[in-house]
Length: 236
Image 1 (cartoon, rainbow, N blue to C red):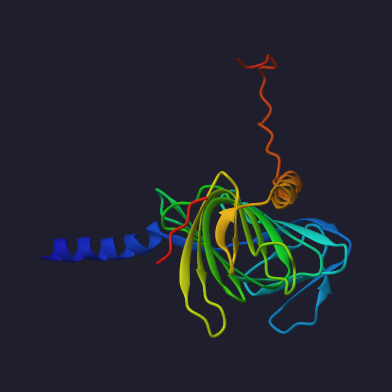
Image 2: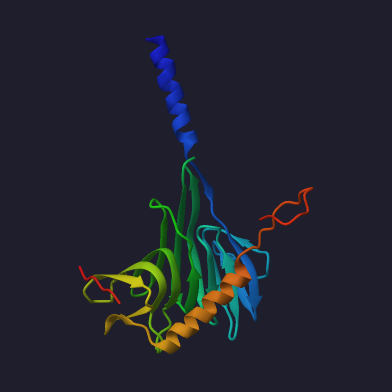
């Protein structure tokens, strides 16, 4: 009985240690033009390259300005376009020993953003809130646009799968599943359709640019040997 009690106690101690959650971070890799950030009611401060942001931070960009963020190897990179606002509602990483669970919850109340997210574990959660709904993504490239009156589609998907719960004000809630390639876009009045070439090219250019700008370059450690080594749509 004593051995059983000790064993149960050890299991109880080991269980929480096997899954450790740490705060996620968004590293500013590029700032072009003017941008500011604030958190917890603190007055806005200029945003600079090298700044590390956590949950609760809000970023705003000025005219003709962009900000590139690196959220980690799994969560990937983001570019916030000009005159935009982005809130980092939640950034968390949970190490389970066998897997890495990433939680990213962003809010884009006004503006545009481009993203390149690597393949996430099944337990991970990556969501973007917009005024008209919430998008869930994993292993995806594309753009979001919540700028009122903008002629570009609210969602452009270049690769991967995206689920968007469209919840317009005083309207019916509908779930859309977007898959690409080929590149597709979502417009409330038209649903999901093949994206226009001009829209696709803009998204491709921005995604490629932010990927090069924000993704860190890893160099192998030096060694003594210097020789070279050998449109689909589902409504529910």
